[in-house]
Amino acid sequence: MNLELDGFNITVLSLYPFKFYMNTAHKKEEAITVVVRMLWEANDQASEAFRQGDYQGAIECYNEALHLCSLLSVEVVFDRARFEAIVHAGLSAAFGRQGKHMESFAASNKALVFFDQVSELDAVETSKFLMAQVNQGTALAALGCLPAALEALHKAKQVFLNKSLDPAKNKQWLEIVEGNIVAINGQIEKCQPSL
Image (cartoon, rainbow, N blue to C red):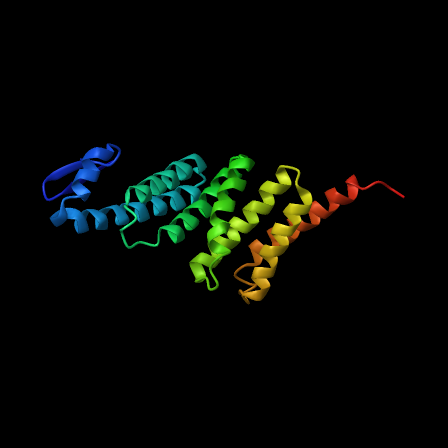
């Protein structure tokens, strides 16, 4: 990926020229603005790829967004943790659709670490939290961790109820969560010895 700033062409994948440019005082703010714009664009491209069923493309774009985020120095005023949580929630969904349940579980956990620490989530964060929570439960079920999967899915259901989310708008999500809970309870009952 290349950046062009005031006639300078910078290859982002080549970190040395980019870091050098970032350290040039009169260009620093412009470079930061460009990188922040690019990382949000990569996230938007990932979301679009996901909606189109291109899960591998979504994973690549989400990873690009995380890579661009890592290029920003810690001194840059940018809510890195919030951005990374949003990206990891998307990654968990894309990995899950590919049947990569361990990767989905890991990505959902990275997202949930942030979301669990925030007392008030906005609408976008709530949807990403729910996505990560449901993906965690789905991944745990696929990995055979049924009690933990139930716990994760019940937590997602509780968020729907506690946040007073519109049931009509979230009918599909609620049906998925309820269906998964019923299916997992059925699996657990089959595993229990008969008396």
